[in-house]
Length: 298
Image (cartoon, helix red, strand yellow):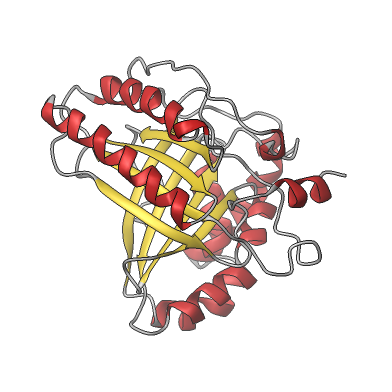
């Protein structure tokens, strides 16, 4: 029997078992517990879509001039496919300062689900139908950080974008603070960033940014090597969603100050990275104003 078909069959056979006994990912060394930041009521996850503690930050390079086409295919084909298999596409975005960059976030409940779900998808009928045309305009899909959620700071699983109540599509501005931490400095940076981020969403009394997750590198082998991940050291990432460009600009100014302090203290091994991006029309992770939230949660 073809090994690919055998692997897919085994993966699909195992999927029903995942909801009954879910082994946990290998625990990192003594993670730092930090207090949860308050989140608005409209950001509560649907009850059955919780606890996606293993997260991939996936940053793709698309062929010049083809990003809109790739984003439309992604929106149309892939988010619900992963959800049906037990994973979660938290959101997908178009980077503002890199016209060929596409960024998305994929979550799993734990590491043992990851190879099972990925085998079912990448050896399954949907990917087989579309992979040739997708890969043809995707020269680089290997810029991936494998991370896990810091306690108290999950990525919210927002209600799916509603094409009736949100006819204009998703809006808001995603801002991701990526910190390459020095040896032995991850716990300190997690604590410092959690403390700093508590003020990001309440700067000058404003309420135009919300906390969308705090993550750190997961120190575990890549158990689906068909999809490479970065191995260039430990990272800490804070994810925020801003109401608009003005809120995103104020947030970046606050982030700059935090990064200068961490760099001066010897906590960073390299310059910080930043992602500022617009949600695609069907991204779950987006800005929800009060009216839209009220409509969705009636």
